Length: 68
Image (cartoon, rainbow, N blue to C red; front, side):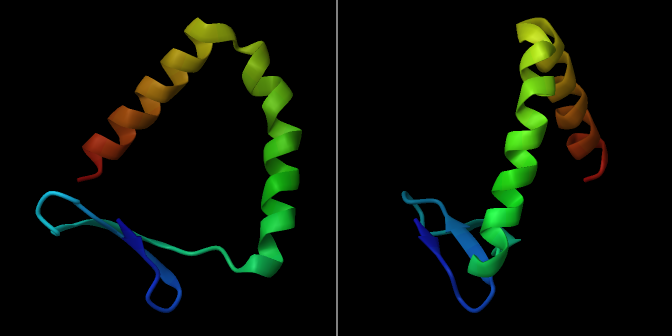
């Protein structure tokens, strides 16, 4: 379940109701610009291939885990 109090999105575990995390919500007027950046980056991401994307995601995972 996700709720949006103010300018934050709060994610809850549906089984327990416990808060899993919280992130800033993107204002509606900024969504178009965000999507334009995503569309611009997508061809380079695709060119990495499956193996290249897997390595990039594992590095990202490690960075997140190391930052705890």
